[in-house]
Image (cartoon, rainbow, N blue to C red; front, side):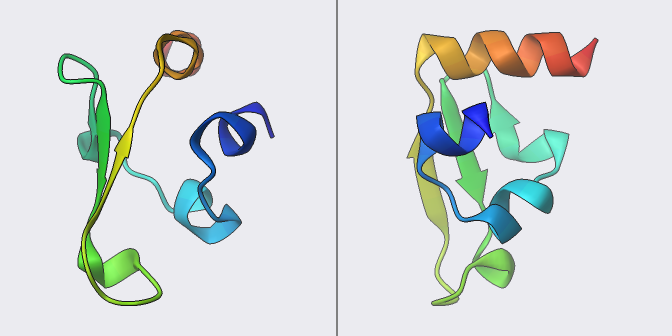
Length: 59
């Protein structure tokens, strides 16, 4: 739930997220067009709080 609030992503986008889509160094999440409702790629900027949550989840 916390990631949804911090990224404003749809539930299906968040549930289907792959680790390869996250670029922590660039602080962005690249969602491919194939997973988007409108079939265009989407770039989500990641706040430091999101990166911290991702690091905890990754462990």
